[in-house]
Image (cartoon, rainbow, N blue to C red; front, side):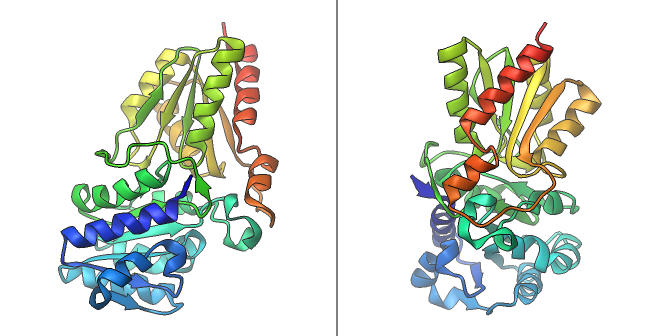
Length: 313
């Protein structure tokens, strides 16, 4: 069990050791997003900007255009919304190479409540030209995503991750290919397309579906929301003809929308969304909120059985 924010901090530290032109901008929540590791090792390359996210984004754009590799992270609700104008005009319009960490994503932020639960950030970020959007499945993948973003993308990258510890099941050292989905379980009955925290729940759901119902579910980890892996999604659609899309995000504008866009254009299939259905979250314990909103393996299983009963020929 490990929090994604710790993986982000470790990834930024490793990248800082490899690239001496990498700098970090802090927003007075340095330890909360894992950037205290970099600050301790490279204090001269860490800039505390205070609680001023708009200034951070604008400054990061200028640093990037001056030859540096700026990284900044704050809670996803602030990164995606409070400095949306600066990210759009200063960073994306200039195609500036800035790495943005969107921390504390989803309802699993828990007691902080609706104002701090980033549930619309994917929708905002994937709509911006030049922006690459990553949503890794665990702390190890968050760590690997940082270096991948720096080495594979010549432009802005938004990396989304959570606060609470989650199963850390992907390889500690692995090459993450941006834009290429990962098939974690093969199957022909139904495809479960997941991102972020719900990848593990989807794996668990696939085990239940096979062990209890002999249903073979394909599980696909979409760690890159944009650019999305069209070929893997089309293959899954052709193979299974029924899909469930699971994400700790609003139903509109996130992974469900991205998958639906691909399938409607290339291979229409039956698709069900497991996501927040056009509402805000609430304050509560993280695990209780995940159950309350259906972000669990059990709910994925129930929806899969319902879909198969309805549409399987």
